[in-house]
Image (cartoon, rainbow, N blue to C red; front, top):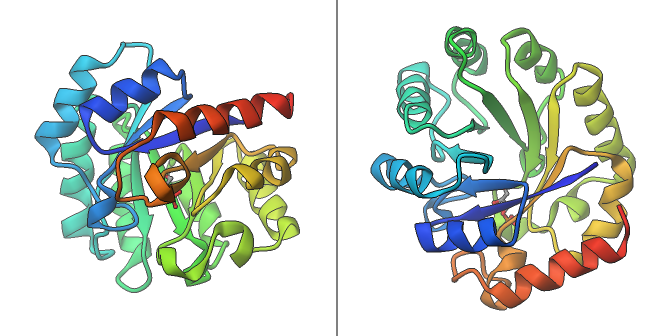
Length: 228
Ligand SMILES: O=C[C@H](O)COP(=O)(O)O
């Protein structure tokens, strides 16, 4: 069954989506970029206030792919007690050196989720390297929110190939990127583990605006009506 991930940037927003029983509470600061990070102290405080049973992920920020930047950021975020640390794989830098370093953290029990960006046309062969390094999941998102949604950037059959490849390796798959309620009906049949949202849940669908309870319930009701 496909779950819902909601990105939030404060304790108040986290409590709101926890009350709405979303499946993954994703801590990030959209004002700082596609995978903008919240300060470590803020993440730690939010984790302390959420129910122990809530599943929480957090992003490390839009960092260049340099192991000396990525590894300490992941370690610090993991130490807050989040369930998953999300790492954006942005173009440039040294992906394989980062993955090598992250393999050590994965072996220590840090649950890593790689985020690939559809608008940067990533080489999907990287999924095998992520699997071998012990990543727990791979998701697709969009880096430049002006370029359109995931469903505008990739065809459904390409998304299905991604989901199937990730699932065949036993990893979690996620789809996100300016998704709206109307995308849910098209994406649920693909069988991803979760669909991620920020903009759709905010006032005027602006991802840097406040979360809007009304938008959350519209999306939830729409989802439930599809009976998936
Ligand atoms: O991980 C999910 C993202 O926060 C999605 O954000 P977005 O819907 O604004 O593209």
